[in-house]
View: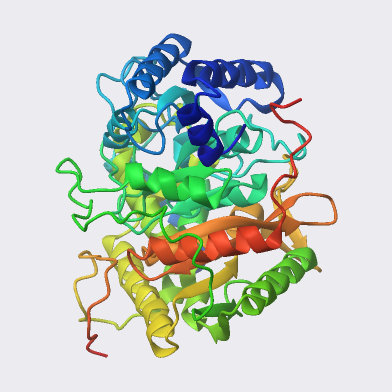
Length: 464
Length: 71
């Protein structure tokens, strides 16, 4: 049982208890730990207590929402009271967090069962997430920085895990591990109680097995928060309703040019097929280009370096030897660069956001499609991809297609779109207008049903 | 001295690291200087997107779209 709707149905019908589901999750996490290393900490006592409370609520006829009794994992940059927040770094203390992050409070209020903390790339700043392995091929990376969350969901350990996304860190592991990943609009999900990477680009959201699961999770996670000034006070729609409306009558942009090229041939073929499938289901498919996106990486890292450097300035000054050399270089640069470079990157970010808005408005688009990533999961020891004769660093290749939606703040959903010749997952990215997660989810649900690729499980999976 | 008789960029970076309290054996001035040069070049590539001066406050980012944008 790996999906939120299946779990919710079984719990409410009495076919399954939350305790049994939670015990299965805890057992799977422990059994697969040697291969996947998806979790850095489990909380069996707290999880089973929460599961029993959920079972009592169900027995009493109370309905706390779509995640009631469902086991979930939390990325280890998010505070969970009683567990340490280590951020994948030896520099962070093992002292337990005193309070829950806002999103954790929302999950608990909704009856979700927190089984433990998932592995993150150090300081949420990278796409490799060592030592986590990809359940589809243990020699390959799961993506990052929410790599543990991607591996845990793909392997069926939990139906949902929380990730964060500053340049793609929810969607990258979702694409590489074959799960759904949702980065909602900037401000849709509170970030209070979560370690930052870059304040103006950071987002929180779910990785799930299905689009319906992501919709259910967002219903619980979204909403205003006085503890996070960026959290929007807009009303939260019922994201789970209307998922089955199809795409007939929608206008969907199909991006070409920058920043998609170069990409692996299997990814290009999958992307063309995905666009064709949505067109066959009644959407008007519109080819579009956004040349400004060629500059997305320069703007993204021009913002990440100074914001991350400022956030981690105490750590960089006091214990730089405890930071990964590549990340340390970025943080030091962020403290050294003159302010004009940061403000120029912020201006470029606005130009890129405006360019994306124009392409939506001028073409009357409801959604915009891209491949989530131009390449599938890299081997763990790979520094670069080879596209023809041209080498590109793995990190930059992944972030160039996801980062524009951090810069613009637009909602972006990654759904499984197929497999490459090596059997590795490929993702389809569906972006929508600000706060229109409903349309991204609606398109994603239609594609998920039409593509018919659900049900294929990775070789390393909780079901054995 | 750097090439052409100017100040050595690595020495300049080392001095700046000291000023900022970042002089530590784990932080290599030469590596930092090379990395900064790459980032400054990346920043220069953004000139094509942004005007030299003026423009709206770039720090007030809001993902919402105005009903009518003053293009």
